[in-house]
Each structure stands twice: as structure tokens, then as C-alpha cells.
Amino acid sequence: MSYHNAVLLQESVDGLNIKEDGIYVDVTFGGGGHSKEILKRLGKNGKLFAFDQDPDAINNAIDDERFVLIPENFRYISRFLRFHRIKKVDGVLADLGVSSHQFDEAERGFSIRFDGDLDMRMNQKSKISAKEIINNYSEEKLAEILFLYGELRNSRKLARTIVHERKNAPIETSFQLKEVLKAFLPNAREHKILAQIFQAIRIEVNEELEVLKEFLQQIPNLLNEEGRLSVISYHSLEDRLVKRFIRTGLFEGEPEKDVFGNSNEPLKKVGKLIVPPKEEIKINNRARSAKLRLATLK
Image 1 (cartoon, rainbow, N blue to C red):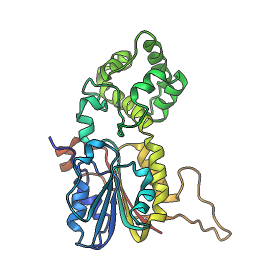
Image 2: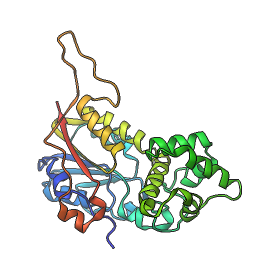
Image 3: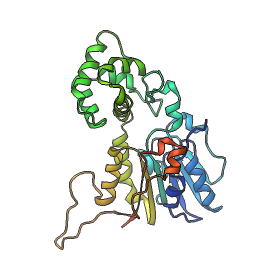
Image 4: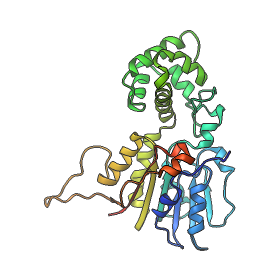
């Protein structure tokens, strides 16, 4: 099995409008699919930096003098690029979410298909795992996470059940959590509800929405004139943040206007929303929820 099938590969890299001698960043390296496609289009003087905090991804590093893999979270994109004496870039690509490899490794705890340790850490050095959240967070905090990040209307009942059951014994594996919540998992909707529950916990473990916000806020100062941002998201929480930041430069509220009624949004969208064609979804089912948005400096 391949490490990860890159979603919207051609479309996302096309969206970067690559210059042969440009400097580009792939902030979610994973199996290296997008990075390899970018390198194909770069000339000998081009440069590609990639980020990935998952130690498993480091094994996929590409042997190419134009390529540098930075084993860090992309929330620190500007800091680590400055370390490499890079202040501005011509394009940034982000393929958000969990890689196929992370889903397929049972012991990582990302998948509802396998019984694995409740981990879900993308960075294995992180202190807080899914197990810590499930067994130690208060009922109120658990309910808040399940509601905000899983968009589950019965979040309070779910949280109450988890807190009640963990008093009897710690909840340590994926299937234990599934068993604890079986009363809320009707056969017809079990997969969907479990996916929402696991998504909520995973987002909290990895601070995914905070990371995305910090990353997006750095983009206007990082892009060269005519530089491009290419972002693939997989659920509405991410996509709303990306869409809103491209439109307004903010995550909530509306931009202030000057006395002439003009506002100062840093980015502008390029083209329309792009989703995978049916053929790609047939080959790679995980592409079904992908949405690609492109932007450049205003």
C-alpha cells in the first residue's frame, strides 16, 4: 500500500503557477506526492521546502539538492524559513488532514476501522494524546470539543457517558471507546457518527484549527507579489476558515472600512472552488470530501 495518495495533485500544483526558478513550500509533506510534482516543474535553480512533524514522513525525504525537509509543525513556517534565510516565497501548498498512512497504521489510533491505542498525535513527541483527553478532560470540556469540532448535537450526552464509564475503567483503545458509546451508534449511521467523534478528538489533540489559523495569518507577509496559496481541506471547519481568511483576512467579523468605504483584505481568491472529479474519487475514496481553494496577494 502506498504511504499516501496525493489528492487533487495536478489541480493543486497547477494552482501554484510555478516559476522554474521560484521558491515553494509544501507544508504537509506526508508521502511526498505534491512535493515530487512541484520538483518536476522546477528548474535547477528552483527550491522547495517541505514541513512534516510526523517522524514516519521523514523516511520519505526526497534526495534532491533543490529540496529541504523541515521536521516541524507548519504553524512555525516563517520562523523556520528565516532559519534557512528565506523571507519570501512564490507559493505555498497545504494538504490538510490525516494521511492515508496515519489512518492505516492501527497503533496511531486515527482510524475507526482498527482497534488501536487512543493516540491520534501527528507529532509523537506531543504530551497530550486522545487517551488523555478521553480519560482526564471534564464533562463540560469534552462536550464542548464534541460540539465544536465534531458538530454533534448530542455532545452533552456523549460526554456524560464517557465520564460515567471511565470511572469503572480507563478507556484506552478505539474499540473500547466505540463500545462505551454503542448506544449512540445506530447501524445505519455508526460510521458517520464515529468519524465525527474521532475528528473532534483528533482536532483537539493536534490543535488543528489553531495551527491552521496561525499558518494562514503568516501567508500575506510570506508571499512574493503574484505568489500563490493552494489549500486542500477535508471538512467544513477547515474549509470555512480558509474561505473566510481568503475573503476577509479575518476568521470572524468583517474587515474595517476607511472613510471611502474601502477595506484592506490581504488576499484575493483565484478561480472557483475545485473538487475532485468522479474518476479520482473512484480510485481514492478519501478524496470525496476534498475542497481546493487558491489565492494570491491582492
